[in-house]
Length: 376
Ligand SMILES: Cc1cc2nc3c(=O)[nH]c(=O)nc-3n(C[C@H](O)[C@H](O)[C@H](O)COP(=O)(O)O)c2cc1C
Image (cartoon, rainbow, N blue to C red):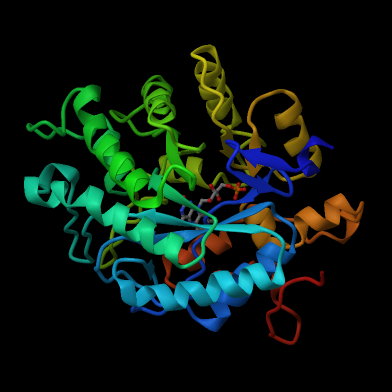
């Protein structure tokens, strides 16, 4: 199967297969942003399960508290991250990259900062924050870095039609792209040309007034032109259609756009694959061959394989099915499909994340009340 053939990401990083474990928050970091042994165990498990590359949960580039969110905002986080990469590389033959993000303030009082509220000084510090975090990631021994330009966070909103800033960073798409260009430029300079620098972006925001695939294609063309080494296509995850709950901070994954990010079982299989497919076709037509990655409701190796053979994407990201059974890739490769604990897309994992509780698959729960992942 094409799925299990080794693959070179933009000629820089060879991975064992075309399966990516994309970012899935574990809530196993400390509230100070440090890695823990339990968090390292989880990533080692994903690596041992056979995914070609594991991208970690989002890691903050800025010193700001937000529950159990990993950080690379200061040098003091390098030793912990180094411990993670050393164990990962020592105990698996997979590759690992952190997803680095910048996010906006939000509180239980109902206050939510938007990109329109950021001062020019706050915007101008962002490229350097990404660059420094990426440099720390390389120092800590990661194989690549992924820039988080998707969902509900600063970079996605800067790129979005929701960005109504009146200065050089907002308004027209050209202006909305400026910060992204500065972030890519600064980060590339910090990590060097030989290092794999990928990006995750929304193919469509699925929120009224936000970006659609038309903007998604235009953004992807720019990202390819700026030399990103892969473009991972996600979708949705916006505040505009989120469902408010009294006394809780607004959760961008509760409305329709949120469901497009983590499609529940009532949505069709491969529901977002066409976004990657159309973006890939647009890129290829303009002469860009940067790998395009797709995600969302790809439950089986057979369906993943069809995505590759139809040329809809170059790699497939499998999140909740690998959370449910970290050995999803290896078991499929070894013809042991029957032994796989299958994801049922119930989104209880997502609910745990939203409640700041450890993220596991609810199917891991045993009758005696204990919780453990399925056997290798
Ligand atoms: C609990 C949970 C946490 C997630 N955390 C992140 C994240 O930190 N960054 C990100 O880009 N996507 C995140 N995602 C989205 C996944 O990477 C993936 O795109 C999505 O779940 C769809 O893929 P799937 O259908 O294979 O699960 C998360 C998803 C879940 C369920």
